[in-house]
Amino acid sequence: MPGKKKSSSQKYGKAAGKTVASAMRRKKSGTLRSGPGGKGGKVKSREQAIAIGLSEARKKGAKVPRKRAA
Image (cartoon, rainbow, N blue to C red; front, side, top):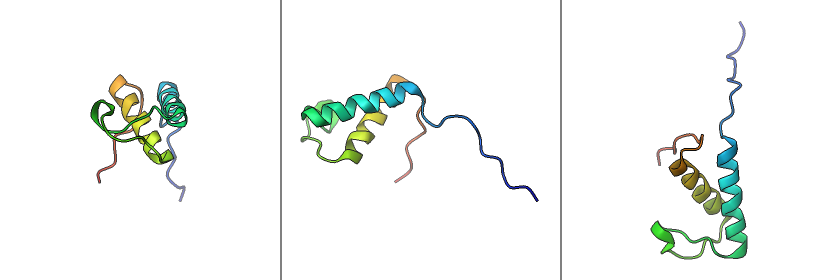
């Protein structure tokens, strides 16, 4: 019995990758901040920077999967 075929479509679009890369650069330079309007503290973790980048990409309408339920 053959196994399930995986879909060949991309999970994330090119625009999403660019937004995440931009967020990572801002983290490195120390200008990436968390919270609405950047009113939170300075982002220190790589994972948080990626999450912020994906969130921004979602708002712009880039191809990004929905957030996982917490």
